[in-house]
Image 1: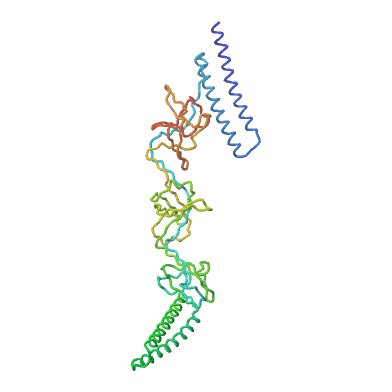
Image 2 (image 1 turned 120 degrees about the horizontal axis):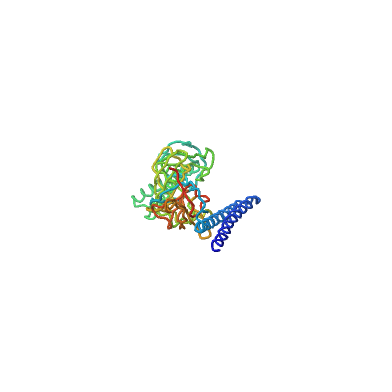
Length: 394
């Protein structure tokens, strides 16, 4: 009688296994016949199907084990699944902030007049010329000042002559001392006016305050020059270069002066190792970011405003365990991975819950859940359930 009951229970379990398999198959088929939705809906459906598949596989495995205990002759011989394994070890894990910046020069200046500016009469430089500090670049109209100077010089000669006459009279004890002093003051005043006019004339000569290359010359003879960058002369000195990058404000606490930076100039196929040399003290109102500068060595092939790809090192862990992010799976309990373990004389899959850390590229840091020496199932892990027999290529 007991044997018959066990037989009935065994048959019921076999039917249940078959029913679970059919139900999972119908559910998958039903999901596949649904109308195409958005990307988010498809991802949600895929996640639900994977969770359902894992749960169903675990239930099947559990029932198969119970069946095997009740009827050893009914044990299903499972064909091991071929997988690829990765033995875990400690290694350095780094995280970069990937951004785009530009090459800039430390010394870029726009030529300005020393006075109010004026009409350009002569231009002594053209675009691309090498400019030395103190070099005369242009001459502004000074006709009015020169006319004033001529008048002032005439007044000065008259004032000096008047003073000399007054002094001669004073030497003969004729006249008063106040007359002599007034004549001398008049000479001094006119001389001062002549000096001021000469200074104004000198302001019509526009000189280069720095050396470099005349990168832009947008002013022409006959135009009015007042130092406007849109209509003037731009001098660039590329002897000292830097890379400028705008970083989102949420990274403010992770970037410090001296932080390592990897810079790539794609147009020149050049890579440069540098460090953060300057961090702006304010957040941009529109960009909501802060500026970071990194000085780079002089290179004649580099030009200001060239595109630079910037990788700022903001996190590093010397002895970390990292795995491909694609191996991370999720169920109702959280994130897990599958590892291969020995069970008797065979190799089977085992779930291991994990706590993840930083993600960079296709690698993710594992804070806890895995240990050095674990055999991660890195290939063929899709559809594997806990306890499933595994095999690897020789």
